[in-house]
Image 1 (cartoon, rainbow, N blue to C red):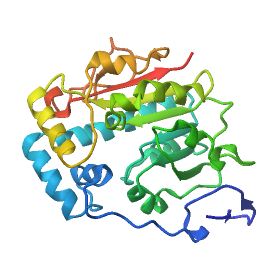
Image 2 (tube, rainbow, N blue to C red; image 1 turned 90 degrees about the vertical axis):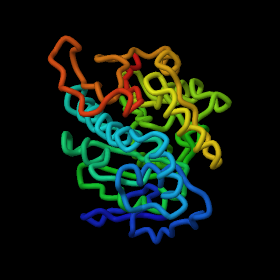
Image 3 (tube, helix red, strand yellow; image 1 turned 60 degrees about the vertical axis):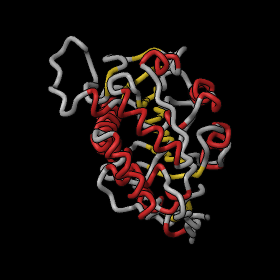
Image 4 (cartoon, rainbow, N blue to C red; image 1 turned 45 degrees about the vertical axis):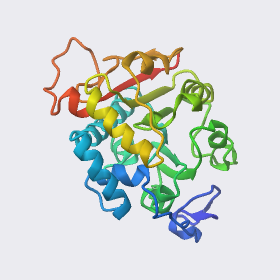
Length: 295
């Protein structure tokens, strides 16, 4: 970790995983499957290993829609970020549970709409940290960085020098979009996901947003529960939730149009406007998405 110089030669004083810092990726445990690598496999990526492929293929047998679940989640993220950047004026994004970089990533979508957008990625998985250089391409106008921190301990995110130092990545006096896409279902009730969401939103000002997607068994109980059992058998905690339970995670926030919908049906804007025909079924994607506003 160290200082990085911009094109003008002036040192930027923030912790960064950019290649110029001499950063060394951590050792990766290849003896057990990991959620980030499984998700990469579902998306058709190449950053996984035999142990991940073996479990992923069992999950795909139990829940054939899992690849469409992953793709629909990515599409939901793209739509939500584009909407917030282009229509809601959001220029700051805190993406928690980043996962292995897959293009187009959040920063590419946000900075396409606004080149000044700033993005801070964070994940607790060393697998993601090992790939974080792919996220490090700040421009003269925008800015991108990555930190390793645990969603279950929000204070470790907001206490990081990237946010508390003299040149923070995000200005927490201005609205921020917190993105929790396909991550909260890895928190069990013992992790107090409602308290985690509340702590995250308490740390950002009024006018901020929460983008959230969450796996559910509401549409496909047998297949989803079979997939959950496979994760549990391999030591990976996961807890799917109903639409009502997901709504309880965002109490105190105002859910924006079009409300809480399956991610394959979610499209920003007025619910009375014509909606695109979904590419996938609710049963295949088995995931709800929403954007909520902090008054």
